[in-house]
Image 1: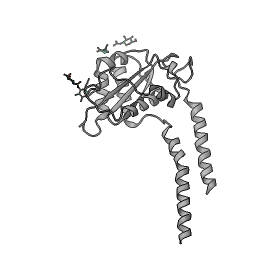
Image 2: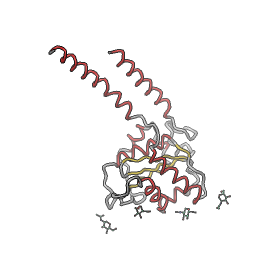
Image 3: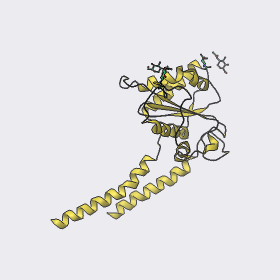
Image 4: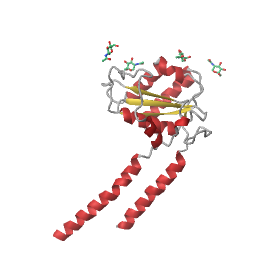
Amino acid sequence: MEKMSEKRVVLLSTTLLLLIPLVVCDLSDYTGMTADDQQVFDLINQYRTETANVSALAFNKAAGCVAHEVAFKFKDNPCTNSTGANTLYGKEQIPDYVNILKTCDVSLDNVKGSQIQPNCLPSGLAPGSGPTVAARNITMDSGYQEYLNDSSYKSGGVGSVGSWYVLALATDQPDGNFGSTPGSLGTTNGQDPLHVSFFTFCGLLVLWIFAAF
Ligand SMILES: *[C@@H]1O[C@H](CO)[C@@H](O)[C@H](O)[C@H]1NC(C)=O
Ligand SMILES: *[C@@H]1O[C@H](CO)[C@@H](O)[C@H](O)[C@H]1NC(C)=O
Ligand SMILES: *[C@@H]1O[C@H](CO)[C@@H](O)[C@H](O)[C@H]1NC(C)=O
Ligand SMILES: *[C@@H]1O[C@H](CO)[C@@H](O)[C@H](O)[C@H]1NC(C)=O
């Protein structure tokens, strides 16, 4: 009996220990916009095509990743006066920006011509209304409009955590495309090589865990 439970404890703690890196693998892997983010993104594109008469933004996965990470950094900030019940355009400093870019495999040289704008929602909104309020705040504010009306932004992404919604706008130029290599061309990001090695690593980990039992 005693021996049995001891064995179980060992088994359980080994399993937990082995699971830790798996969870880490999962968290650092940005898979795309949530349904809420997509709704805000679609409404912004509706503004672009119907009101501003510029082309809809394509989804840029690296920009979405950065937007998500920025929202995550802001998540514990209350929507105070200084951040705005609805954030005043351009009043936010992004903390830990260099590490955010690293997480998303984006080079600093590839974001200089981009725009990243956090927006905070007031509390007490009706459940489920967050995305529409965020989109309305973003599209009705003249600070944001200056960029939303600009046809040089070709792609982007929305990320949100709690009350914070973040819009990242990318150009198709090397200095604003959220690419991973300085001077890289094209609108896509260079996340894929990282992902491949990441998935290989996580896959091997799973195999190893199965082998261990
Ligand atoms: C929308 O933009 C296109 C291309 O720039 C232009 O030809 C057209 O006149 C514009 N339409 C309106 C309603 O401004
Ligand atoms: C909050 O905003 C009001 C109105 O704009 C202003 O008078 C007040 O000084 C602000 N308070 C803080 C702490 O910034
Ligand atoms: C943002 O949303 C809040 C809540 O609906 C509203 O009171 C505020 O006026 C909005 N701000 C802008 C700039 O539209
Ligand atoms: C953006 O474009 C819309 C539609 O043309 C216009 O009403 C609005 O004033 C523009 N905003 C800015 C800041 O230029």
